[in-house]
Amino acid sequence: MAMCTLAPAPTASAASPFSAAYDRLAEVFPGLRVLEVAADGDLPRGGGWVRAAELARGGEALDAFLSWDDEQTLRDYGQRARPDVIASFGLHRYAWSACLLVTLPWFLHRRVPRVPAGAASFDRSSGRLAVRIEEFSCLPDDPAAALPGARTVSGEEELRAAVRESVAEHIGPVLDGFRPRMRRGPRALWGMVTDEITEGLWYIGHLLGEERRAMAEAELLLPGSVAPYPAGAGFRELSGPGGETYSTRDRASCCLFYTLRPQDTCVTCPRTCDTDRIERLSGTAVN
Image (cartoon, rainbow, N blue to C red; front, top):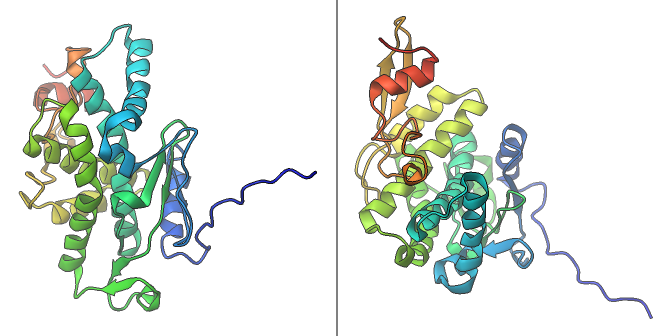
């Protein structure tokens, strides 16, 4: 008797208005790949996959997700981190990737997908995100405006508002799942999201050869405190020993890595002084 096999979940067609952006992401950053699932398809689950809605509920799914960070920390640093530190690592690694689902199509093609927490699944072991996009915002002159699920907006500022709303709709429930495990209030948690939006776009913009435009777009997207985000992108320039300039920013939150390696802070950490930043960015000691 022939064995019965399950059919794969329907995937979005090559005509998806987001496939070009996600394909470009995979080209410049192979560590993160996006699988689009058709509107009538199911998100993958099981194996290494966890759905964002499961993270939002906390419980066993979040325990299993964070065990990856716990094991990696012990393996790489020979010590266990505090539970709230592990939760911070796990939230960062999810949110950095998930924000790009929204920000990269906006940056490249001015299309903003709506991605509720129930519309995404993550396999961190393979660096894959699955997403089901049924609605999106775009400008009136976008050819994609004629597609099902499209919502046209009046201009660039309304489109930026759609980006902020889409990220908040997706990440807000996930923050609720993580919050009991973290020693942070709502403002600090949304500060983390501010950093993930900004630094994810900044980094991928650099890989695309469009770092300056990515920084400018991030500044327009997050010009300051815009609810629920408590801070802006906040880029600034530093002058090197030879008069060269380096771009930096002060994170609105802390990743807590200093609890493992006090001497090894991030270059954008508020704990890192400008002298140290210049030295690290230029590779030259500043006298």
